[in-house]
Length: 134
Image (cartoon, rainbow, N blue to C red; front, side, top):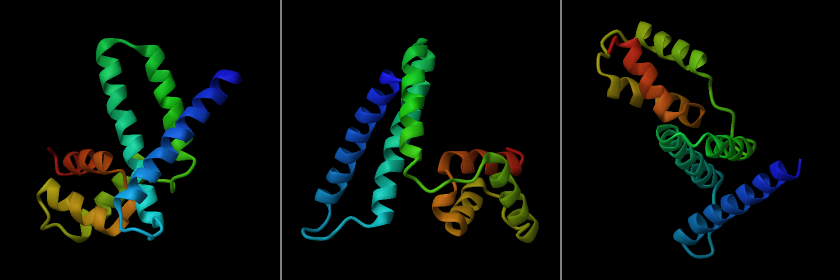
């Protein structure tokens, strides 16, 4: 549909601008690395997820639909991240091997180091807190 194409076009323009800003922030004549590009796009997704929370609080459902569509467009260009269930399985397996870990921050850090970009940071922190009973 035309509306969906318009959202896609606007979103891709914003993503391109975010990548250009990230590139200009780095050293001159150095191409943007894949890791930096992924970080820039993940930042755009995070901004939109934060916006959704705000829109939910003020009841702007039409904006939530638009922002979710933008997130879907951006995620097409990002490596697939683990689902919450898969993440929880990884956390529980890690805890089984490392029963001495009893702090959510340490657990989150260790898993993030192991999984890298496969894990969403906020989701991982929530899963770690639950796994430790807090």
